[in-house]
Image (cartoon, rainbow, N blue to C red; front, side, top):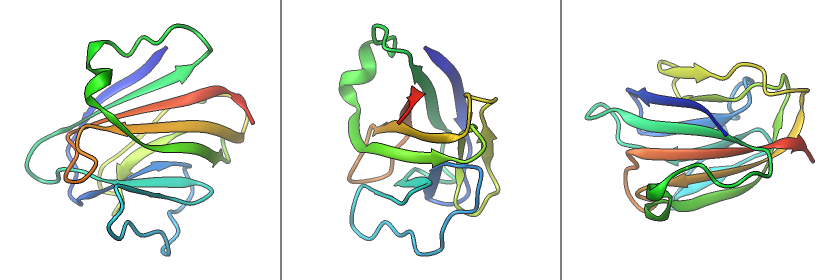
Length: 135
């Protein structure tokens, strides 16, 4: 079920996805399409040129409702993140652009899948699927 769809203007070409806590300073992309720690995933996005389209879904085990364009996206992260307050944040790593979901449920670890339209360059579209169940 889609819970959010936003067009986000970011000032920094690295977008952070995950917990409302601070992003660890040791988290770095290097030459990978994504990097992750226990609480966050970071991906490269197109900054200061165009809006980045972000869609957030909660997976309740239903049929996929992401639409036809899901085939044009590449999964760059499929793992578990700790959401310490039960919310999910999307924003640039400098914290100037930020979107926070409403409460997704109890705090805890959830499976998160992140897909982007350009895994080797600068993404303009990011899909995030969060498991409704804690793991």
